[in-house]
Image (tube, rainbow, N blue to C red; front, side, top):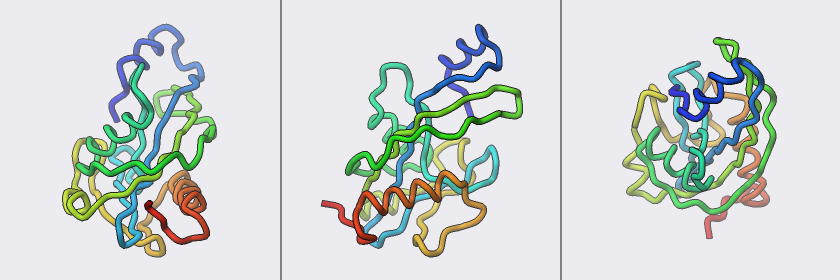
Length: 161
């Protein structure tokens, strides 16, 4: 995963100290209630689209940008399902961070469902999965984000409009 330049600049000044960083994630559903997942190239696990907004970038725009970059899908954002402080992370290089994730829920129409594919080096595979047939290994944060999205949509029934 490419580390954004603004983080590299901060790291040059503070080393591996813990950073508090913004993050966005996007649970994308299609008309058949399948969810869009990518298999991450850094750890081999399946996950919803996620990333870091650039300085000054609006969170919703960042979520859409990440989705197009990673999966070639440009969905329509329905709303924010949750804002959540993630658990502290320690990376292999010693860097530490905590992400404040803004989890969006979005819908993809049929043309966007068909457009899905690996868009950059951050994913090795992309696919649509029924919520009761999720691939493994799946990240813990993805399970939580999918549950939050279902709760946000209400009583287990997906509502788009």
